[in-house]
Length: 283
Image 1 (spheres, rainbow, N blue to C red):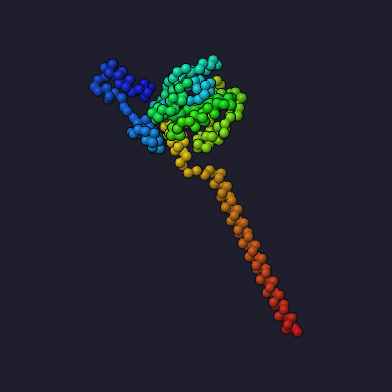
Image 2 (cartoon, rainbow, N blue to C red):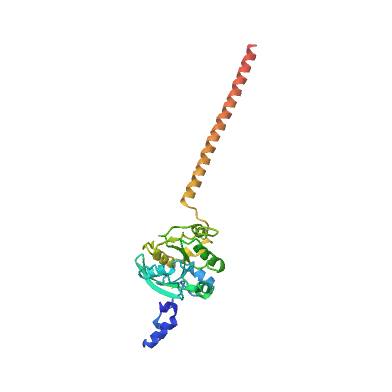
């Protein structure tokens, strides 16, 4: 964790403990997003490349006060739930491992307390973020609006994101705002919020989902997802196919109906002409 957050400190430790040879050989520097380069555009290009080969990822937790960020992080660290609420007054960091399809990944989770906005307005700190975990209280009608306001005020679309709705054990309330959470996520082409209850131990494999996103950041980066052409669902394809089939059947039926009518008309006229000729001959 120290190496991820401050590699210079790790170099200092290596020197202090007498690392043999060049201390720079004691650590391996890997591009945070799978390559070299700097700047938000470079970070975004690197996120397009697919799965990352790193094993340690940095996650920022943001959300309104009392939304359940600390409880969620404590659950990740295997610590027991407590009903006692204590506002986070300073930045905290927690690390633990997650098994993803037999591969062990380490998630370093940071919560910033009252300093959320100062982190989100720093381009350098956002470039260090592998996943933005946006947490809201599903029992508080104003909690989700806090997150949407953050996204309006800061440029966050180039950072992979997951929405987590906490306290699902309490009565669900409708979130105030322009759009409900599921519609809002759909507009960004993200998966719907993950509902969890730390108190009841219902975590819904949220940490595994986080680890999966950090390995494939393009799957949850709004600016990349919004560039993709809209995919046609199986139901939509089936509906279009059914309409096309119905159109063909209707055309076929109409064609034969017109053909039958025209044949009847021709036959009727032929019969009338024959009858007229026959009458003239009789006269």
